[in-house]
Image (cartoon, rainbow, N blue to C red):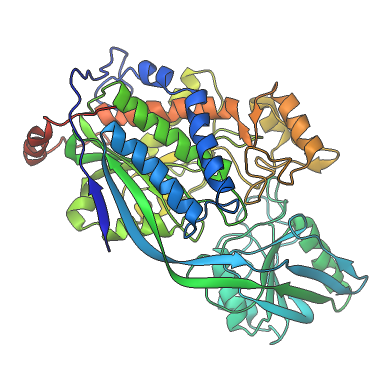
Length: 541
C-alpha cells in the first residue's frame, strides 16, 4: 500500500485557545471554544460544499469512490490541508465498486398486476447482483404487525429462518436486527432467486429502503429495498394465496478499484493521546452527495482550517480523517484501523464521527455511547463523549436525542477495535415524527405522506439543486418555508450551523484535555518526550 505524506511547516506567533470557563466532568482542562466556533461559519462550510458540487458537475454528477469525481475531492481536501500546515497522508487502498447499468424492475405479476416505480417505491440494493427473474414470493419470519421498537424483527437473520424455503422462490424479508447482507446471503444460500427487503414498520421506519449490502457481498441475485406499506401489502396477499413477482437488476461490480483516505494531523500534541475526528468523503454513485456526506466532510474541513488560522496548538495530537469507500461498506475506515499496530491503536484516545450533519428536515442525534437508550454500549469512554455533546446542546438551549450505534457509519471499525467513539447525525431515510417537529421544526407529513429527515437520501437530488435533480419541488418549497428560508439546496443551514459549532466544541475540548476520555490515566513520560521533539513545527495558513 503506497502513501503520500507531506510535512507541515512553521507558523510564527501562534497562540493556543486556553479556557477560563468551568470544567465539565469529561475534561480535566476547561476549554473556551467560543473563538473557534465563531470562526467556523456557515458561509465557510458552504464554500466547500459548492466546490464539491462543482467537482461532481464536472465528473458525470458523482463523487463516488473509484471515480474521477472522488479523486478530485481528495485533491481538493488534501491541498487545502497541506497549505494550512497539516501533516497530510493520502492512504491508498483497493475496494470493489458498484454501479447500475440500466433501470431496475419490480412488478407484481399476480394477483392484481402492479408496476412499482424505481426511486420511489423501491431501490436496487447497492452491491446487488444482476438478474431477471419471475417467481413466486415467499415470506420469511416476518413480524407483523411490527414490534413496539426498532430491531424487533430478526427476519432472515438466521439460516434456520429459511428451513422451509422453496428453492427458486423470491424471498420477502423485513428490516431489523442484522445487516441487509446477512439476510440476502441467507436467502441466496437457501435457493432464493431474488430478495425483497421491506422497512420494519415502526414510526420512523416506514419509508422506502435504500439498502447497502457492502462491497464483500458476492451473491449473484437481484436484491431490492421497499417500503413497509408495500411489504406489508405483499405479506397480506400471501396469506390469501400465491403472489408472483418480477424482479430485474442490471449491475456491474468491478474488483480492486483504487481509492484513498485523506489523513491530516496537527504538527503538535501528545502522540499517545490522539483525538481523531472523521467524515466520509465519498458519495453514492447516483449523485453529488452534498448532505451525505459533503456536509460532514465540509464542516470538518473548515474546522481544521480555522484551527490552523487561529494558530491553535493542541495539547493532544488531533488527527482528522476523510474516508473513502464508506458507501461501499465502510471500507476506508476499516482499512485504516486494520493498518494500525497495537501501539498505534492504543494511542488513539477517541474517535468522533460526523456523517450527515445538515439534513434538510433535520433532527439533532447524538450517538448513544453509554447504551442507556438502545442497549448497545460503546467502549469505555463513549458515554463521556455522548455527555459532552448533550451537555453542549443543553448549554445552547437545544434539544438532542440519542441514536444507536447500529454499524452504519465509520465509527464501527473504531468501536470494534476498542476505541471510545461518538458523534453527531441529523437523520437519513427514516420519517420525522410530530414530536420531533415540535423540537426541531420542519415537517412530519406533506400531503398526507410522511417526510423523512432527508428526502433525497442516496439519490441524485442530494445536491445544491435538488429540484433540478429530481426532488419534489412542492415538498422542498414547504420544507424551506417551514425553516424560514434556511435551505440551500439539500442543506439545512440551521442544522449546519448548530452541528458545525458542536463539532468544533468537541474537537477543541478533547484537543486541550489533560486526561483520558474516561477520566483516567495521564499521558506517559515517553509521549511527553515525543511531543517536545515536535514543538518547533506549527501551522501556517
